[in-house]
Picture: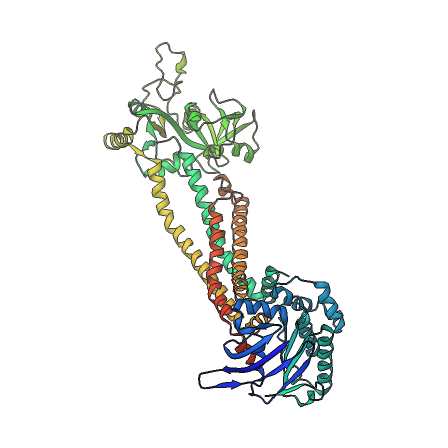
Length: 208
Length: 421
């Protein structure tokens, strides 16, 4: 599903970073571990096609990302990748359900609002479907972000520090939820983190 | 979910900003709309009132006053002219038609105009009810007079001396309504038409009441040597004791436009004024005020455009994350560009729609509250094609205002924005 080899990215001509090769099969989960500044976010952005201009190879769901045009990359992202960020970045002007529906809308795929509601119910947000995202708690917001990421049945879920701002109890819940959702979707989950608490949750680990 | 829902959600999330932008633009557009409707209708009224009348001849004085009084019936007469002199002028071969007017009386602020049947053909008047005036003190009234004063065929009323309400009454003279004209949307709707003799008669009585002045002549119709006046067929020609207020003249040929005014103004004690020329002069005087108002409206529109631009620019700064997230969910650059553009266009579109509605409402209210606007026949219930131009212009304005913020959205560096938290 994911094949990284000889990957190198230059921030500036003087500053560049190389990444270790690794291979993930469909449905396999993995941790990207490393201190701040070790390039976790950069690698995640490269894998998600948010950053371009690398050397080496990133193959995701059978496509070499550098061969896609910018517009093609947008479509590819919409179809194959779900993002989860440390801050949830929900769109505050929209309701909980609309935030989730944004995902298929922006990706240009068919909008299945029944599916959106099912996901929200599964994640325990059944009563908040029509609430404004300003009215819900931080934990609930994180779950909306997860719902949004899995809405389009992505083959890859990329999570950037999803737990580092949470206390132990919520950290447990979120990682369990992520693993559960990813497994149910048969998605490959990649979690970039420096959070030591996650070390024993996911066996496969890549250290940067 | 579609693009309009998204745009609307963003606008709704900042209700005060959105309302401010819409109100600002609406005010500017409303002023423009009112000016447009007012000007257009005024121009239409003026041209329809002055249609077919090439020249007005009356006593010396202000030419504009002569036109205002004798065509639009709003100002006071410049004085009277001798019937005999008027007849001499009307003999000119350059003239196709000359219609005398005798003004001076009114009823409840509606003017009584003494004239001949020729006046009806000048304005293409048609009767709605009854018949034309024939004998003294018989009148045929305009549609507004009939509606405004609830006058029907057969009703009688007493006129007032002077053209304003509350003048001294001509008490023993009772006018009779013989007929009512169909609505023409010209000044005639506000007039009470009668014969020239009626006006003379009423005034002679007024004069003899105060100090015995002169005996009223016998009716000349009975005289065997009677030669009818060119102007007033029922009256004897060459009567220098009688006066009229003015003559409305229609030229026989374009040559007359060059020769006749010069001849009248230069060789007689009378004055000739051209409605086309004087109304153009009037508009150039009014034009200053209109220009100032128009300028004011453009300033309002400019400020609202600036406000829309600043609102979008600022909200886009706050929305950098939103935009980056949207890109991470697969939105193309073009989609975000169009989204922001549409937000600006929606604001200006709503602003101009409300502005047009407001402009029309102002004129509707003005028409209901101010009698003069009603009499002038200016209403808020007409639409001009220029309003489409206003609407299209506002859409263009929205695009211009949103262009820079939309370009920012287009250029958002997703990775940088997402990594910067």
